[in-house]
Length: 444
Image (cartoon, rainbow, N blue to C red; front, side, top):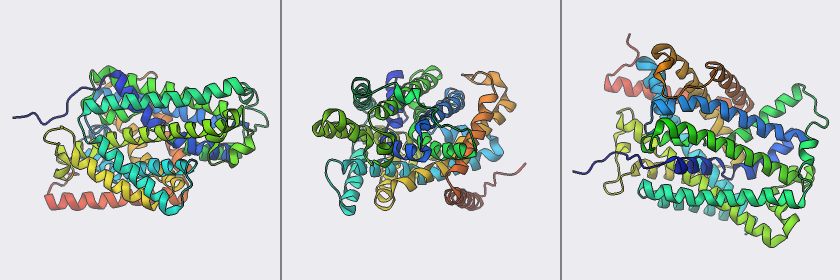
């Protein structure tokens, strides 16, 4: 009889590559202009620094939980363990419930962003743009429909494209621009008043979105070699590397293009390359940006497909999601369902609405909730229970909770309400499910 369980075959290099290609999707290229316009000054770099610092702090929480519970599903396990037997079932169910909505939204956002940037090469109307975004989702699902060791090799190949693209952009600014000027003038006209912090919060929604994915390795915890070391290492390597690339990329573009041009452009990076190297080079650079966007969508879909599988295997979600492919040994039902819903969403929504909705939907349960769960678990088990321990506990956890709640508020009142509505609907479904199965979870 074959062993139908996930195998630990992803090493540190592949884990870091999976994280990094998830982080550097179409996001930083699409939101670069939006961030500059929102901040409305040379201090827009602070929004990228803000996202970097939050990622580092939050990664400490993921590292403690990921190293201690290296299982498929990531946050599903963290919330279940953190909130304990009484409330853990509800919180973990709500996470999976949200994942069935927000994971396809993430997939859709990357596909829509791909289509948007593809229009720099080939003008697209509304219908042809939707055809491109839908086709991208279908291609991703096809590529992921294979063994995990093959996917690990594909991830490293895609990651190389990310590094080449970012190196070209940064090198272009160093050679052709006044590279240090954006840093020298970062505080010109800066006033630390209420307006600045409101703008920072709004811009921070976009930059934080661009950093998301540093934790993707946790969703693949059951497939990571030496997870107690490689899960934390891969996250901090990913954040440090991508954070530096984001800052250098923004500095590079701002060293060549005037700020007002960046604010008004839909293709700032492509126009940057066109300015320094001509239209032919700009088309090649755009093709590389599309490679990066495709790589991110590949990585994100891979990680999310493991979440419904983990919950179903645990008996907390629909049993069909627990099935592994009989020959290729991966959760194929989960992959196909998320891909199908992502395909539908890619035809229905616009990217800016999707970005805000993704964060509003995830913050309360996954990010802030997970941090609270870590505190509760520490009180029950003690700090010696964890396989990896953050410095200065609990200061990073409290700081992360406060910042995530500020980001939630900055998504806007309508997105906040949408996130709460999804949670409320999930609670009703959970209670209905518990009543039908006669497994009431809140008994003392």
